[in-house]
Picture 1 (tube, one colour):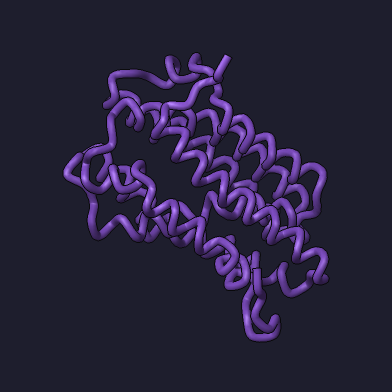
Picture 2 (cartoon, one colour; picture 1 turned 180 degrees about the vertical axis):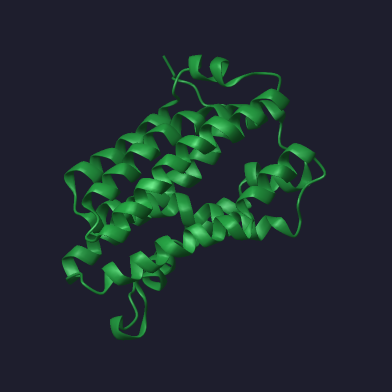
Length: 228
């Protein structure tokens, strides 16, 4: 990875330059293209929603760790609120989507956590607990930012499938983008305080969990299960 002159770039610019190839691979993935052309099998989408419910419970805990490690009160409040919102999204959005898929949140809870889901959540929590605030922030940021970018990219195309169109509209909304913008502002402020080694760690975690985002969609598409 080649980093342009530090003085001319915000931290968000450096981070995004590191994952442009991952983002391109996400947009080209048949799970994502299948949302917009309506060809994604409903069973793949259901698998994704079930795993997303499992994931968001772990992600909320990772955000709570960010709240505890935030360098100022505004960061603590913001990440604590986002942790609560992640739980609310799991409860409300997934309940509605699961109903349309002929299931329920209670039934989804009984489904096993898939390998990629467990690996991704474990990485988030391990990084959050063992690392600095900047490391924890780098790890949780892709789930915010990549979803907003994907939602914005897909919004103009929407989907002939009303269920998929609803999902796209949520992540492509101005409300969700405002949430992401608030996290990016913190990212830039924190980035200005980091030494080169600290920034390298943040970048490494951001790259790793961006890759986990691709893996998560891929696992949903394949309806991933444990091999034995």
